[in-house]
Length: 459
Image (tube, rainbow, N blue to C red; front, top):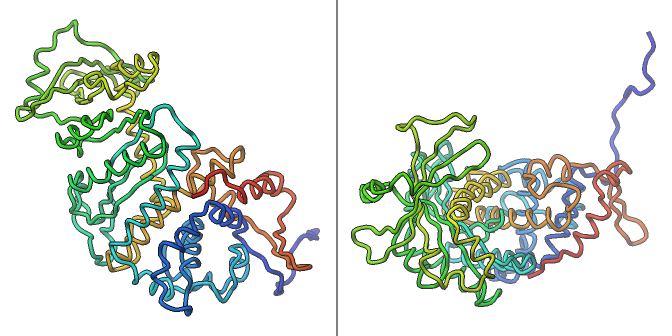
């Protein structure tokens, strides 16, 4: 029997500088190029009391790389990374500046809940630059909350029973174009809308959009049933911002639908699904304002089979589109006609399902079970997760364009781009990252590197 000449006969050590995370290098280059790292270093410089220990800049760079890498969710993994010279070289960081798990913990302990607004400002600045770059004629946002299940974790500050009947955290987030652009970390028992913070969050967003995009910008905000609150709707109406909110099937709603005649029903289809809908003016007993209501009933299942009367789920959508003429006043006549249609409002409302995909993406870029005991330390990890997700979305759209789909999730990019082998060579005063020709070609790595060094968005 012949023996293959390709068989490995022995194992030896090498002094070559090799990394299995060569793809993290262009991501870190992108992070530098956006100016986000400089802002983090400047805005949190007060945390560093002396020149000793881990620098603020290195803390955030290594936290972001740790989340982007995704190999482990445990803080102790930093002890393994500290020993990896190849990984340090890919991060363009001296080995002596690599953080241990104790250094990460000590730095995290210095944060308080009052530092959260600085995280939010940096996130919003980055996302607003992306918004200005894309410059849409209509800016659509979605306000929602997300449950982070910590039921199986050890006792954590702020972990409380959530509305989903699991113990965890309950952050509130605003989504635009697949990106979380603002987020507040909250304990699990916090009400969904928490009216004071919700209004402040929305007011901050509207002010910023009009400041950066101009007063003529048309803004549409979608909200789920947890934000069905007259105070929110009235505020948005006063600000001439269009809202589309899921109502609740109270008795007053059921009474209002009884007067709908057969000729007032219309149909809306999406794939095999079919709804019938009717619209009318609606206000609850305590309201003084009527809003436009669209009552929908699902008629078919996914396979196209019709549902029996008693099995048809119903929903009511409330909006000020078509009631407040000022919310669409800056649109062209054609766009205004489009948005006034009931089917457009239903379609926008149904797209809330897509607005929840960033919640899944956030949990994939990070994790639900947070590592620390103290609430403020876990807030830091959460806000780093949100910021890393925004940078990841930007990296896909700016640097990985044409190589990966913008809809790719973190694990796809990790396995196909981040987790590739590279050799780092120092020669003639320069540092060179070397990859196999097949990877350079299939991943267009040279082009990705060039785009990573000069991102179109910088804060």
